[in-house]
Length: 144
Image 1: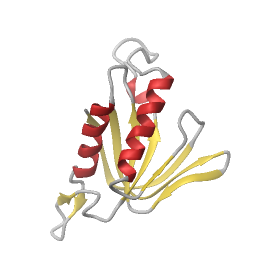
Image 2: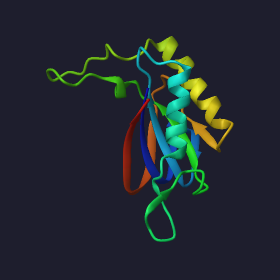
Image 3: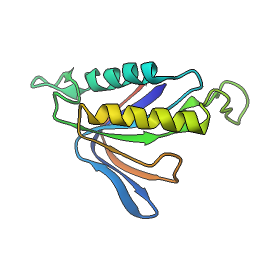
């Protein structure tokens, strides 16, 4: 399971010009699910996302996690994170989980996050437009 996280001042997801998820300061989490992933992977990755220290403390050092910074999460499904880009000029999605498995784990990840932090989400497999103001920019690729 893969999370591409971006520290944001704000972020929102729109579908057909309707806002379906919006946060203020926090983390935009693009979530990719691979074939071998399960709930254990989702739990590990969520703990990593929640505890990854990417917010500045009083000295300006990245020592605070999203919860310590009173931030929020916006989780957006993105199967393209599971792409194999090593060969050729067209990505292969053979490592990506089947849609049914990916959707189940995406919703599981979201439900687990809701129990710990203010969380918004996009819509699985929808054509979404994501807008954000990146803070830093600070972007990290996390895997579990």
